[in-house]
Length: 327
Ligand SMILES: [Zn+2]
Image (cartoon, rainbow, N blue to C red; front, side):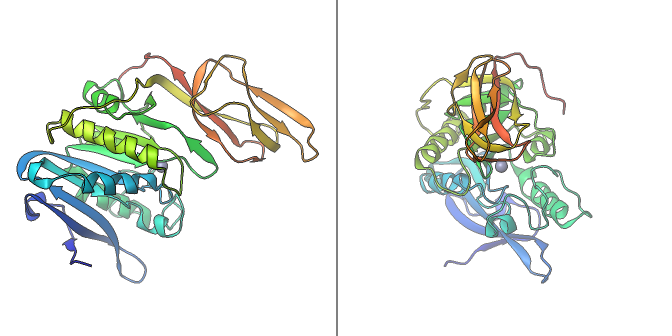
């Protein structure tokens, strides 16, 4: 393996060679052996000036499609022809990735505790260090996620669609659904937005696997964004008009048993339409669930083992009735 460039403090693009791809390792926080977590960073610095597009993946350690999106993206770019830079963090949550788990090693969800804390818990210090030393240097951020275990997702975007700049980036993503969402619950996206960085969360399918067609669609989406930002010369290609949702929510069961879904991903359901059934272990119907209003199935359960309170589906309410997110 070639020697890795070391990042031990604030990321400095000028330290990287122009017209080249450089693999780096950020050592910002130490584990209990006193060893730094080796956070991988790929820097594609163009030969010409331009914006710094940050792309992060596996903030949740079991959400892997984004890693392959980054590899394909980087391998398809000629840095000699690039204006600006791509700074990619393919595995943001290093200990979670190693453990095949969503959370950080101490059980915290890194995408709920942003912006972290310099003198806080291990996860808070880790979040704070990457956010302030690396992400803060980006001009734009695309944060790649997937569904969690036991669930599947469409290819959809969570973003502040009331912000015209962010909305344009979202529209170029080649996604099936665009969901207006402020991400105020400690997400990396909202923390980046507070630095003035337009940011998207891209939900790329399902956990702990590689889905080639979704990966390719996402790569095309990021290339579209780069063409729009004049980082590369390329024809913008959007496969289909996305459905726009003004809000969304999960529908949960209130009876335990065996869950069987009645609707597919991306289905448009009408108010009152059956969406799922719960039976007991003898096969007797316990309860039928119906859509409370018209909407689109953004994500859904794939796990038949259903305690009372399990998730059924993530319903997107179609429409453009939304207002600006608070900063
Ligand atoms: Zn995630």
